[in-house]
Amino acid sequence: MTWAEEILAKKSGLEKAVAGEYVVARPDGFMMHDIFAADVLGLLAEVGIRELHDPSRVTVVFDHMVPPPSVAAAAHQRTARELARRYGIANFHEMGRGVSHQVMVEEKRVREGDLVVATDSHTTTYGGVGALSTGIGSTEMAYALATGTLWFKVPESVLIRLSGRLAPATSGKDLILALMRIVGSDIAQARSLEFRGPGTSSLTLADRLTVCNMGVEMGSKFAVFPPGEDLPQGAAYAASYSVDLSSLQPMVACPHHVENVRPVQEMVGTRIDQVFIGSCTNGRLQDLRDAASLLQGRQIAPGVRLVVTPASREIYRQAMQEGILDALVAAGAIVEGASCGPCFGGHLGLLAPGERCLGTHNRNFQGRMGSPDAEIYLASPLTAAATAIAGEIADPRSLLAGLAAEGVPS
Amino acid sequence: MSDLFPVLRGRAWLLGDNISTDVLSPGPYVHAPMAERLRHVLEAVRPDFASGVRHGDIVVGGRNFGVGSSRESAPQHLKDLGVAVVVAESFARIFARNAIAIGLPVLTCQGVGGLVQDGEIVAVDVVAGEVVRSDGTALQAERIPPEMLAVLARGGIVPMLRAIAADQGSTAE
Ligand code: SF4
Image (tube, rainbow over all chains, first blue to last red; front, side, top):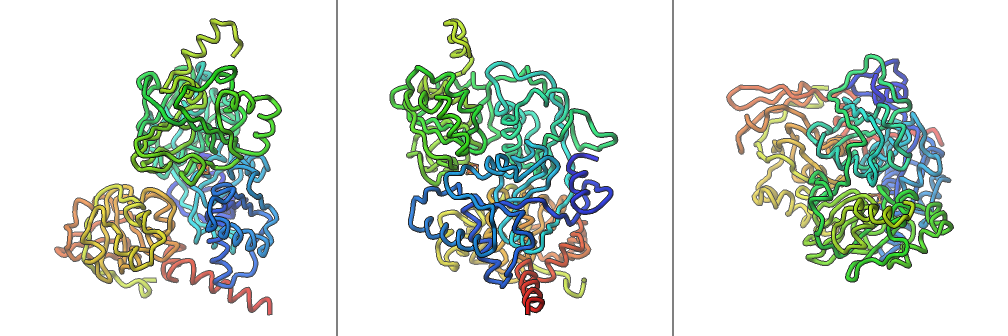
């Protein structure tokens, strides 16, 4: 069986599940953030449900509109906070703990082989730890919380076989951006992306989380690195691809579609007004270290703004202790709290008409970060840092080559 | 089950590929009063839709119907305007789930976009997964599994939750 079939069978109490079948499963975990928690719990209260099936499986994280930028957001959060208490949700994380998906991983609220659902499309992230996880709507979440069950269509799987090790100056972000081109959403739509092969062991947890986070941008239902490299016996895949990690180069998604991906080289010289390093895609310690490796002792270009949001409090503190935040701030960055920040255009760094932003997040839809007349480019933290220094899209390999020539260890 | 789901007969509204949640439930009106929100449904692609759609009409879409965000208002607005069923070549995953959750049947049917004419009367048998044109030609859609037909028959998840709540209430007493 594929990983999706195996986990869905197990969670549905079946010996076997086959792609195309429908099953009723018992998820191990449920997560809601500040945007939808009040809607879900409010609906349960309105219809008269007094108890959740199992509050210990539920996690609430406030990460989107924090600290509340408006009275409406503050009131919405107060409602969610009160309802979470009323329903006995002990795993409640106030603002400042971090972006929900990163918090779920750090708090070990999701583990290898788990099935997890959340009211957020980037729930696919947990495939980075070997879990099967996906986003659902708020009415379905209400049902799942009340009953502990949810129906799933067992998806077909697309096998991505990885070999080699990541080429210098590339990361998980460049891999997933490259896959947007190689695989694309016609193939991945509603399917499970399953990463296997000898190349997987060379990817860090951070890289895997990044890759699975953006699997959803190809329309996939799950994106997952199952444990072990080997292919399961007799598993049937709808399609399969092989990628040699050592052949990757830095990539960038251009406006206004995530699939509009090109090698960074082709876009070098594009003027940029704002650089954003953060989000559940690329706000982890490895990402901040990458950025600091280039920004340390340098200044961002005049006329460029650099916004940094560490993905969690733990990452924030570690980056502080390692001197990373100091290096970034000294280079000209503004470091915001551990939250979604400007990623979805809520607050903390919106764009004016005609402006261009290069960010390490996951969506570059028109209007995603403010004005519909702004442009968003997506790339790795290394590319983002190189771009902030140059004031225009830059290839991190040229900067790294310069550092190597100066004898600076990278 | 087929008693609960009589064959639906209605006028087809033919839409194209990639009908997004932004088009179905335009962002700028999400906080507007409901009547105003409904006036703008599909405005960007079919300005005649919101004023012309009648109770029992059928929406026929192309590929990737409902692509975009997880907002439930997208299927809800279609239901509120009287749409009886959406038949499309393929659906974005969360839209299809949300539609069932709010009690709007959605059928995946290869080739439907090329077959049905705009405005023609078609019959849709939700249980059998059959789409029949006025001249009798038929297409087989993917069947909806019984568990989800049961959700649809109840009118979506909210009535089911009310029943669960009533149960909880009686056991608590
Ligand atoms: S960081 Fe961005 S993509 Fe991630 S959960 Fe927050 S808003 Fe969504």
